[in-house]
Length: 476
Picture 1 (cartoon, one colour):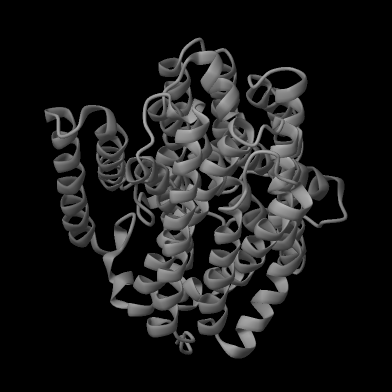
Picture 2 (cartoon, rainbow, N blue to C red; picture 1 turned 180 degrees about the horizontal axis):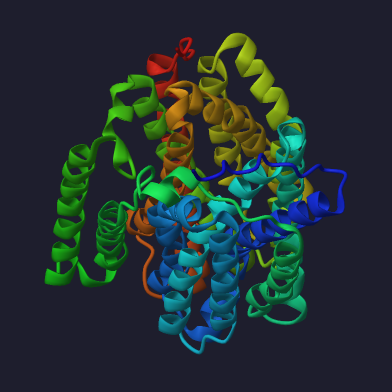
């Protein structure tokens, strides 16, 4: 007989508990930093590497594509082979890819390194939370996860400021090089304090969560094909390469659905989840709202530097109020949703955020941060605050508890896919291509058009919530 696995025993007040938290927080900080600060660096790296709009799009989307496609597979690998082991592999992978990003000599090199960085993030991201879940004593688990969430959020808020300072003081390359000392700290803390854990039943029998490699590859092919077609269409038109990519992406979506349906509950994404209409609607809502967020942040950072004339540091400062509002207000929004249900917050929140974007369309050369930018950013952040926590809670409440992990993972992937598709599609929709982002007139018109599209997406999300979203029923 094999002895049962020991119960998790780390306490938050112990040295091992603090070290494990340190490893998880630093690792998440690397991923969040590179998710938020790259947009601020786009004008500088674009000018230095002579990048086109398509090059800037792929710099953002290469990272998002790998995260969205492989994050669920990364979680399954950790459950089977050891959560600390896969977590450390992801950290080292991410650090090496970050150095390659910082050393890039052209856009092709940078984009390839960003793909690698996203793959490392897909191994690292689920591990940072699953290590806490599996390692801490049940009495301290909530406190540990709350500390991780709060301090990771602080790193998200400080990321644009740190990145802007590095860009102005040193170079855009240092937003990637800074990950190296962080990774060294994570590896040291993880090897010293983080206990190994895995799904023992799956490790012994080979059953349990399976590696749906086919599903992950088909998901990546679907997102990659559609993204390539959208990004290259402005320059190539309806060329054979664009048409083939679009058809390949659509076919991959169909085959993905067929494969996942055949695998049943062992699939990366069990299609039975979508028998819940609420789960399906919430994920469509997620794609729509996070598409607006991704498109807005992509255009705002480039516009503030290339048209308004702000420094990278001041551009990074512009989005800090949004993150602070999310940190402070999300617990209260979650509590409100628990009392009155998610429909009202998920309806009102996108409307407030859309008003903020419409205000930001008026920003022009010589704009004042306090008068012209802050009100719109604050409204957008307030609206988003009403959305994030109620959305997460509702997604988990829409499925049975046994699928909570995969439901949360898919919703996370849906949010990244929304941002990816927005960054790919909006330049096409507003007529921005080539080196148009360096021309003030072309970029100004594209910026205003993009924010109008993003506001429209938010209002569509509000209508969706008002009509189709309700309070999740009691689960058996």
